Every structure is written in structure tokens, then in C-alpha cells.
Image 1: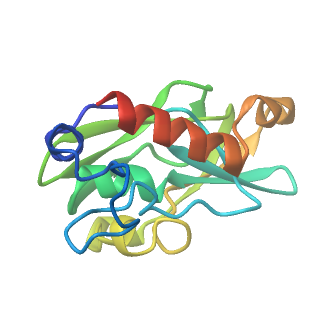
Image 2: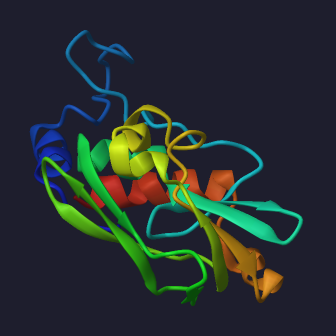
Length: 166
């Protein structure tokens, strides 16, 4: 999901996402760089997927930051349950009004469930990325992979650095 998008680049180029010395913290026309939510209790990948581990079964979706950069999601294609997935491999794609992007698994295991609601209502990825917009559930084959993912603070730092570079 790590991609460069025009809107983010333009915002940075125009300086609307950076504070200017002596300027008010939130001028009426500026956008805060921290507009997307990052939840405690989740792990995050550098490619903007989130993971919630629940007793050896991990729920996976894309982050609020990712959905915001994608824009309105119009189609979600997910790998069928029963398929094996490896950390870093694609398990589907998300099509938005701006781009089509593959979604990579932050963990390895067997897909035990997909969110079938996304077929009829792909916009759940935008409106509720951490709850109704989840994508797959994976029975973990190597729970230690969770240790290599980012905690909320590190993920926030990663997003800020990525946005500043665009």
C-alpha cells in the first residue's frame, strides 16, 4: 500500500501540511498532518496494514492513513478462505477513485475468513477501517511475526516521515 499519491504530494508542495514559524498552529486553511487515526492495541506494517491478534487468529485491514490516501474505495478483491498467505505477499487488492493497490499480509498463516460485506459495500474501508472495514482473518502460523510489526507510536512516526518525504 505504500505509494505516492498526488494529493499528499501537492499538499506538501504547497506547504499546507507544515507549520510555519510564527504562524498559528491551525490556520483556517491548513491541514493537520495527524488527520488519520492510529489505534492502541493494534500492530501496524510499514505498508499500512493493521493487525489485531485474538488468540492466534489475526484480523487484518488497511489503516486509516492508507484509506485516506487512497480516496473513496469502490472495489475490494480478497483471496478466498482456506488459502495460505505469507508475510509480505498480496492477499487482495483495493480499487479507489485514485488508484488500484495490492494489499499485503503483515503475517503468515491460513485465511480463515474474509469480510464478505466489502463485496457489496467497499466504502466500509473508508468509513470504518478498523472495525466494519476489516478484510481478512488469518490463523497465524508464526505468531512471533507480530513482534516485527510497528506499535502505534512507531507507526505514527513512520507515517509522518513518509508524508514529509512526499
